[in-house]
Amino acid sequence: MDLERRCRPLLGTYVEIGVDKHVEAIESAFASIEKVQKLMSFHQHDSDLSRINQSSSGQSLQVDPWTWSVLKRAIEMYHNTRGAFDCAIQGDLSDIHLCKHNIVRIDDSVLLDLGGIAKGFAVDQAIETLQLSGVDQAIVNAGGDLRVYGDDPRLITVRDPNRPSGVIPAGYLTCGSIATSAPYFSYQQNASNETCALMNPFTRLSICDLKSYSVIAPNCMDADALTKALAVHQNPDADYFKIYKAHALLQ
Image 1 (cartoon, helix red, strand yellow):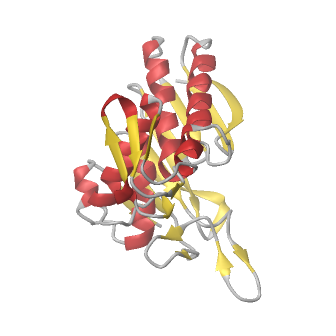
Image 2: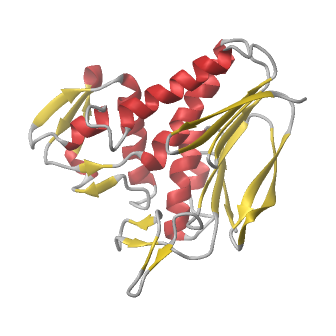
């Protein structure tokens, strides 16, 4: 079935939403994504994330339930992947404590970046909004973080890491998600080193190999985060994929 589609720049990429009916629900889905962007932006000074990053040692603050939920999953992912997924740029996630009533307590100052998990969460929230609006078939694609909903199988492709203008079939999805991380668009080289957006949290060095890291999972937040662990460990059979009912693709 063909879907009615709309596209909008959000989350540092282009987000495309497609539905089979209730086209007006697309605006509500975009609003959900905009809310995630406002709450968890690294650059917006008044976002929940920036408030955490600006907090002093020993401070507590209340955040939106969505931010609290993403932080909870990020901390869980950190432990289950044995540190391969780590949203702390500076400091240690062990200094973040989640308390009742969406309170976050900071034992020692940290600098967090939720970009490696919040985009997937935004996709999930958009899908949930569409479901609540009565949409039967939907797809949300946020620059490689994709989730489909409905009974119709959708052919899923990922970019060819050796030829990013081309794609490689990754199978069919009905109700599920796929997320991909790769260095091909963020890669930069100068006289002394190579850099890209993918980072190894253990070495603090960029992961600039010509590979593509994809994860299929029931929800996009988990798929998004697990691509970073896959890039670090380079092991599609790692035990943590089973925890999240996920399947890894290393291209």
